[in-house]
Length: 523
Image 1: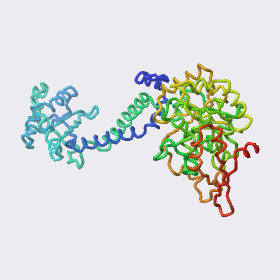
Image 2: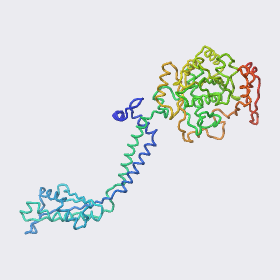
Image 3: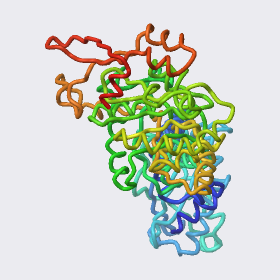
Image 4: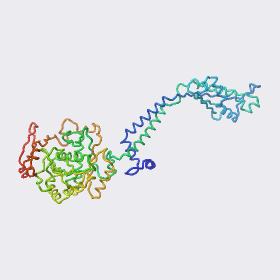
């Protein structure tokens, strides 16, 4: 299309290619505030200039120019066309206008715009005068034809030879205008609005074309054909460690996590594996928060879920969930404990957590070891679903190493923070290692209007997809102190009590405990 070509000429610098009409319309939707603000500013400036402009009034008159013989008053005739054209040219000359100024009393510096023309092929003469004063315009429109008739004989050889003079018979007299012809407020504001829209549109497209941050799902769809499984809106006061399903179970963030859970089930069907790695391009995009909330949402659906903290460089799952992180994955891989002894259960839910354990000096080697492969195979037989919180893709290769054990990698991207080139680079790295990308999760998106979420905002919580919310209990400080007090993971695991949460008829919560050996036997 021609418009596509024009846009590509003006906005050629873009990683995804030249700007198209579709991109232009998308930019207008995304940057509508720029368009509206620019339009309002231009309209306001136009209105100010219009109000400061001195008004111009216009008055017109139509006269019939006749030639008559001075010796024979009855000999009146129409002037030839050539003579009439010559006289019309004289109408705007100083020899006509200067006497008009003197008669009306127009100051020398005040503008007086006079035009004269024939009314078609007739001997009728139209005189139009534009002035800053309506009375001046009317008086001048009436005076110009009379002064023109007085000097017309001087410029016509035919009139001089025949001894004739010119008279101006008024056909349409000049009237005092009631409103100015300039400036036209309506026209100026309309043109200002149009110019503002065009200028704002150009600003919006330029801003969109030069913006290197991922803003919405379209930005991800441009760089990859993998689906965007969910968009999690930014929560005010979010500290990047929020458990949305605990803080606001019916809020927009929790709903977005449930949507992600549902979509992940469809991805699970296509891959045939019940495990996924959750990573990001760089730190701080919300991968751990997404992993924790997704694991909780899956456990709410009755799925036995294991969340593994495989970010052995900067582990944070234990901190998010309030669990003990001194023993965990590295403890098992080093042979210091059995996995069932260091796996912790979150309250009375179906969520089990394998924290990172001590930070090792060689994370990549541990994650790619044969022990890790064997451990993961055994865990797949125990749990319905496994989620692995892995380090970001760009700084280290850990996520790609773990992805080989799972059904794919879920890429978390922060709206307004992650740069498109980082996503491009991460996809290139994953493509090099032939890693399977299950899809994207766009976090920290601008919140939608509250009405968007009103469908599930009723008083009865039972109408929610998950039914009434179970009350959860975080691990007690006593349990954490007991785990820290034991130098070896096996001793800590034997001393640690399993917390089970139940609800009585009054909805109260009672905590019970039993030795770890009982739990292993039950499993």
